[in-house]
Length: 190
Ligand SMILES: [Zn+2]
Image: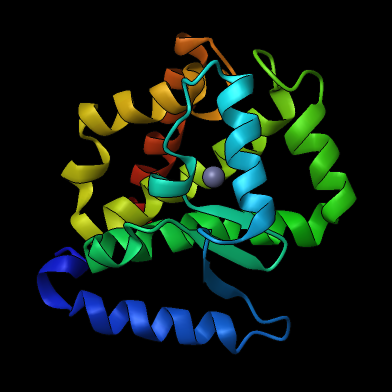
């Protein structure tokens, strides 16, 4: 049985946001619009991706250190979707704790290239998208995590302009997804 069928998404989301704020190093959820460095990031991304990424402020969630910046459309998203995205973002919070902020700037932003072959960014994002698949199965059920349209969307994130073509090798990304799903089934059997 999926959690979305049996639990109240709003209540789960509220409890999760509270648990983030109650961590030893609190994690805050903040609106992206109006934050100067996020406006700057939006402009830089438009230039870098030749306008391929125009929805950074309006549709994308971004984690920097212990702050999760959410877009202006955030409050209209279904509660379970917001919960799912926050779980993905918490993987990035843990990465900031593991690699430190300067480390993340290097790994996420620059190595080996900022555009096209951003292997480190792709691996950091993959760790978070594996969590997306895991939580999708938990919240919406196994079929939702196995839905080919979700896989296409994830592949597009890696191979397209959203993250500046971070890893434009569709077969590799599909293999990561297949391996992740296989391990979810293994876990479920245990
Ligand atoms: Zn991410």
